[in-house]
Amino acid sequence: MNYFPEPVGIGKYSGEMAAWLGSRNHDVRVICAPPYFPHWQVGLGGVAQAGDYRNVYRKETVGGLRVQRCPLWVPSRPTGLTRLLHLASFALSSLVPLLAQARWKPDVVFTVAPAFFCAPGALLLVRLCGRRSRSWLHIQDFELDAAFELGMLRGRLVRRLAERWERSVLRGFKRVSSISEAMVRRLEEKGVDQQRTALLPNWVDLEAIRPQGAAERATNPYRQELAIGPEQIVLLYSGSMNKKQGLDLLAQVIQRLTDRRDLVWLLAGEGPTKAELARACEGLPQVRLLPLQPVERLNDWLNAADIHLLPQKAVAADLVLPSKLLGMLASGRPVIATTPEGSELAELAAEAGLCVPPEDVEAFTAAARRLVDDPALRAAQGVRARQLAEQRFGREAVLQRLEHQWLQELELQ
Image (cartoon, rainbow, N blue to C red; front, side):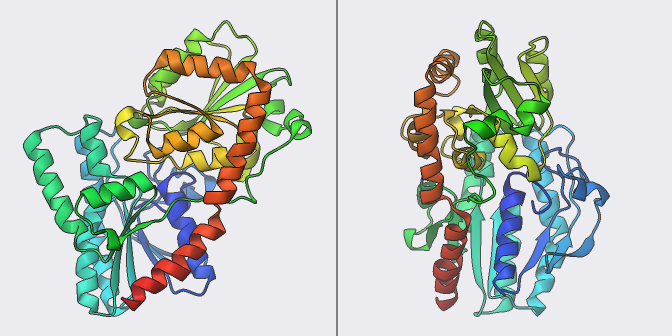
């Protein structure tokens, strides 16, 4: 559903993966929606290239790949029910273009969830293509689990029926992958045989995002444009602004640290909860609320921070591993993350910064004070953050493993 030119989230990774496979001489075709995220408005994909898009069927060539855009319904204020209708609308509009690929007979039909509602259509296409085709479902977000855990959907019977349907669909795929070890374990809990699961993490371009040293920090374009002095400490949040982020916690932390005049809070992004965050921070001169920043300025943007902020609701801890974490790590800056003990995010955050319990305002405030007051700790954890990015999340390493191991292995089965 999400694809280039959306600059953040799932669309970014789907676009980069398809482009990379195309550059390796694979024949790739894409069926997706027009860009709408993170603004939740078609034609506002976060970057200028998206400005001409309309919510209609449209064929185009992007980076040498054939791309079929299919319309979808986009709610102005996403809720549990409207999100499901939003996902279902794309599954319906894309079904005929999807099944038309039976004439092409692809070796692998690769489906990215969200939208999980597209999964039955993908399985039907594989059936129409015959024994030569293989099915792969890649889960970026357990959308049904998240909807129930965050209270967007309710009801025991509804959940039981949804989980039963989800299990039956998952069992139909030859390969099912997800982006973190915890999410892969959840696949097994949902009945997917371990032999059919795979870990396919998101990645970061280690050349595009590199740590800036002390001299570069002083001349960082964002710090200059925003008149941030060298003695001021920047705490930065960047990304989508949705319910699962728990941004109300940040507003409370900022209120508790108004005594620290040396702090600057940069909060950039788009999403349904942005207006609430703006109201909560109204009148606080240390807070700069900004739109999502251009991809071409991402390295300077991430390096404008002294400390990265990664709040998250407790119920989302094992449902999603935030992709924005990878850019934070690559920038060589420490992270303050909220997550329960034992989660994969907790393991990474404990090495590359500080980890506090979700929705614990006092603990988050104390962690911020500790990092602000200890430049040596900030520097050491920043070095470790970059090391983690290099060891585990480099783009070339992840995508080469996808090509050489999983795709070839799948085609041989």
